[in-house]
Image (tube, rainbow, N blue to C red; front, side, top):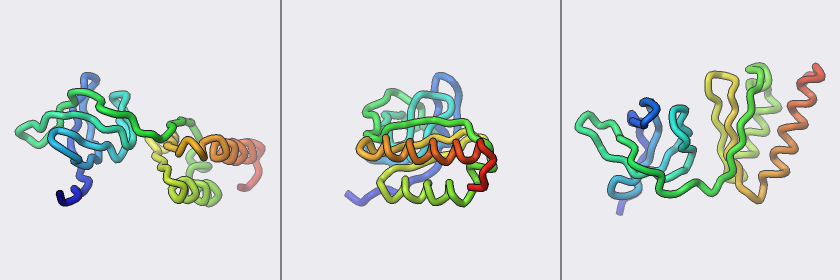
Length: 136
C-alpha cells in the first residue's frame, strides 16, 4: 500500500466542526496530525471517521491514543516567539515529539514518555527565566 499524504479536512464532532490535518491510514481510519480544539482528540491519535459527500470527516470514535504525553501551557506570545523557545521546540521535534500553538498563546506539547520529565523541566526553567524579566 502506498503511504498516504496528510491533507486538510473538515472534522465534524459533537462539539462542532473544524479544519484538521489528517493522514488516511486505512478504511475510515485517520491519524491526526494536529489536535482538535472542539473535541478531546490530539496529535497522532487514530480516529474512525465517515467520509461525507462534501469531503468532511464525521467523527465516529477514537481508535487509539497517541503514545506521546500531552501537556498544555498558556504563555505570552513573546515567550512563544522567543529564539530560546524555538531551540526548545527543535529539541522536542528531534526527540520524536511535536508542539502546537493555538490562538497565539496556548502551547500544546506532545512528548515521548522517556523524555517528558526532562523536557518539561527545561520548559519550566525557560518560563521562570522569562517571568523574572530575563532576556531568554
